[in-house]
Length: 232
Image 1: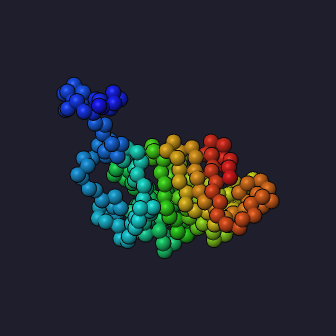
Image 2: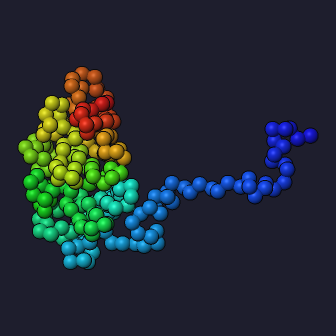
Image 3: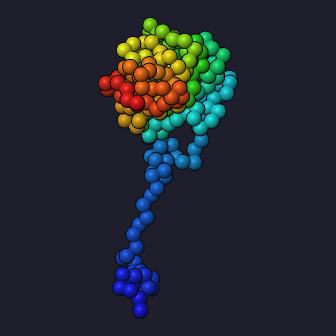
């Protein structure tokens, strides 16, 4: 005898009215909401003359990211001809943002005050907020922020596309333009652009951190854009 709890499974095929329309997977919903059909492929690392850039772009999954609606794509590239008047101060990768609606590209990792001049060292691993306004990346450049005091370690920066301003996220406690005392990387930004999580070996990101951070290895930190504070 079939237990009443399971009887409905042994009553044959369900009636037509019992069928429920399967939900569309989130990944498919996002793809369908993009600005072009799913079957369309477009070149994003476009040179100013319309051809492909003169060097490699986006050589891995962590080297590019897309906004939620697909309009903005951020990527790293060694190309030197993606932005009008582009001036290279390093021989490595820089961070660029492509607007697929206006078909324009901007240099994200640019020298402070010079939108077409790259930072003096490489920048990598971008992450973008859902609306495409904020971009987070790591860099060894020392001229991305006005008054920046830096060594040769990796630091994490936040770029605001609306104001064309760059903020040093991984700065020493109490010194907004002074880099921390050790390497920082693997940064990701939250969808709403309010939080940045990153990994660092630095011991001066928090007040009195050296007194309790004694593991001499990587730790994970959370930075709030609204308050400029960090949590360990």
